[in-house]
Image (tube, rainbow, N blue to C red):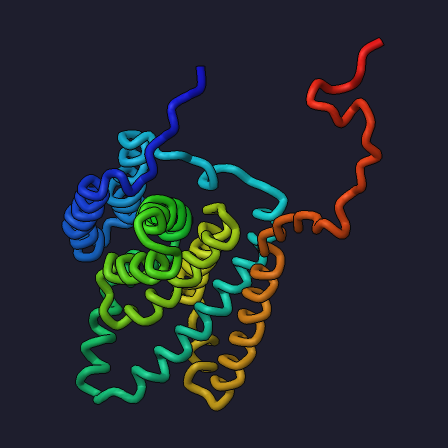
Length: 292
C-alpha cells in the first residue's frame, strides 16, 4: 500500500506564524538576561530554546520532510568550502563599510553606539578556555544550526511553497535580520540572510548556509578578541582595497557555487527527423513478439 504523501509546510500557515511569534517571545527575555547579566552559557541556551527547539517541534508536528536538511551529497560537499569563503568575504566587506559609515556620524551618536556595543563584551570577550568553549558553542555552533534550520529549513521553505523563490528569499532575509534586534546591523544582517537563503536554494541543502553562517560568526568572535589589526586597517587608507579584494573573491566564490549547483538540463526529446526508424515486423504488433 503506498504511503501517504506528507503535506507541504505551508498547509499550516497559522502554526508557522505562531512558531515565529513564540521564537521572538522566548528570545527577548533570554537575550536581555544574557546581555545584562553577562550569562555566557545563556547564548547557547537562548539559541536552543528560542530557535532550534521551535523549528524541530514544528517539523515534528507537521511531519514536514527532512529532505535537504540532513543529507549530504557530492554537490553539497563541493559547495561548503565556497560558501565559507563567500561568507567570510561578505563579513569583511560589511564590517569595513559599517565602520566607515559609523565614523561619518556625529560624535554623540558614535558614543551611544559604542556604549551599546560594550554590552556584548562580557559575552564575546574570551579570556579563559571556559569563555572560548561557550562562545564557540553558543555563537558559532548553536546559532548557525538553529537559525538556519528555523529560517531557511522551515520559514523560507514554507514560503516558497506559498509563493515563489524570490519573494520567499527576501521576506525570510528580512525576518532573519529583524530577529537579531540590532538596528545598526540590519543592512548587513539582511544581506547575509540573502546570501544564506540563496545558498540553500542553489544547493538544496542546509549544510552550505550552516557553514557560511558559522564562518561569519566565528570571524566575529575572533576579530572581537584580536581586533586591533582589523581596526587599524579599517581606519587606514587601505580599507578601500580590502573591500575591493573581499568583494572580488566573494563574487568569484558565489559564481563558483552557482556554476557547480546548476541543475542538469532536461533531455531533449527526439524529433521526427532524428527518431529511430522501425524496421517493422512481428515485434511492432500490439501483441508483442510472434510466437512459434
